[in-house]
Image (cartoon, rainbow, N blue to C red; front, side, top):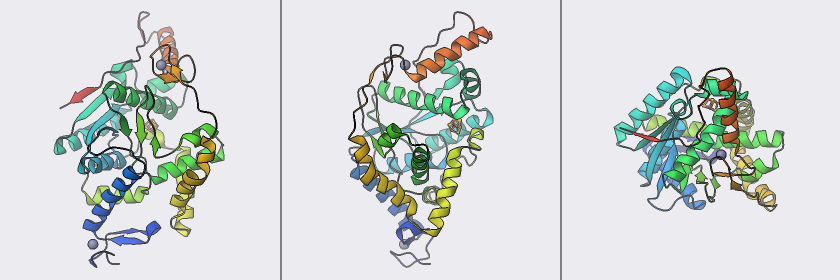
Length: 321
Ligand code: SF4
Ligand SMILES: [Zn+2]
Ligand SMILES: [Zn+2]
């Protein structure tokens, strides 16, 4: 197999797009494709400041790397979730990445900010770990972005992630989730815009970029990811993709182009300020505040917190050296 552009030995085959490229041309192609996605959806203006949610995994570190190379002022935000050694290693890898490149990194420690990490939060809230964690991540990332004056938050979701979410939302039809899914969620008062510049790259393509760029990322998955439905959906879609290269991309893009606009034609959801924290929500109190208020009540009953302890929604993001 030779590179389509220079005839040298190809290092990566992008079957879905009928491409084979050498290392140099693959790295260039990857960066240009990201830029194309950013322009196509008007995700960022040239050189704009953007908050990148970084877990330490290949997708988020590759995204931070590409956005930096494209000239955006990409600031990293890492959440310390308190999931044992996995969380410690995530921070270590993220810090090393930032230090080696002189990039600005902010960290919010869930335990320091609110008193509990994900394992205790899950137990006290009665939710499964990923539900409590996901809700906290979305809320805190948005809060840090808004307070820090960022218009946009970027996440490393790739095609496999997005196609799996779509698959899940179709299996158990969720009309509002289907209407909202996409590479760009525009900003609203109190809500930063959310962008997914890698949404057209498969997991394998992002992995190839990370490896060829020599990015040292955390290889292990969060222990709570085991058994997640999204992994089953990814496996199912990979089976289809194997027989029909490009099927995953057609599935996602076909939905976004042809079906989603009809779903969005419905009524716009009305948002109001949460009575507790002031951030936008559909009810009187947002689900983040409701979850943590309940956690504090239970923690006091079990004497894990003193009677006078009060949940405060605001988290401090600390800039790490
Ligand atoms: S797998 Fe679940 S618990 Fe682990 S980081 Fe992701 S959402 Fe959080
Ligand atoms: Zn080449
Ligand atoms: Zn709230």
